Length: 178
Image (cartoon, rainbow, N blue to C red):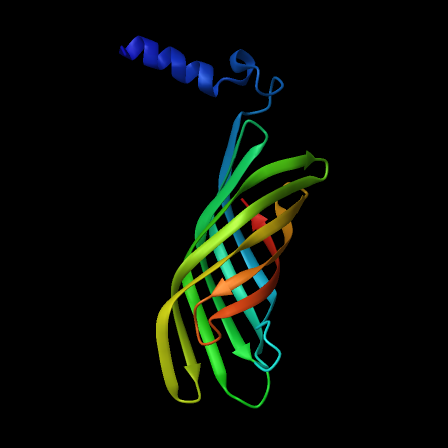
C-alpha cells in the first residue's frame, strides 16, 4: 500500500463527516485519563462455614477510549486493599492491570456497560504468616458519567487468589475523567 493510499484510508477512518460514523462536529475517537476511588469494596466467600467477609478500599487509574460512539474501553492499573472482618487479623493487597471493554448504551445520561478483568500479584497476611501469589478479578460493570467528567460505578464480580481463593465481590466507586 502506497503512502497516499494509506493517508486516504487514515482520513476516511478518522473523519466523522466522511465515514458517516458520527454527526458533524462530534469526534469519532474520544480518549483521556480516568481515576476511580472505591470506598465500598465488600467481599465474601460463598461457603457456609468459611466466615470470610472482607471490607476494603481501592484505587484505579488509566486511559479511557471510545470508538464510533459505541465501543468503549478502559485500560489501567488498580490497587485494592481488603481487611477480614471478625476476630482474625487478615489483610490482603492486590495490585495489577485492569481492562474494561463494553459499549456506551446511552448518551443522556452517559451510561457505559462493560465486562471487567484485572489481575496481578496478591499479598495476604493472616496473623503473622504472609502469603504471596497471583490473583484475578472479573465480572460485569456499569458507569454513569455526570457533567462530562464525574463517574459513579458499580461492579459485581468474582475474585480468585489470595487466602480466600474464591470470593464474590461487590465494588462501588466514584471517579473523574479528564
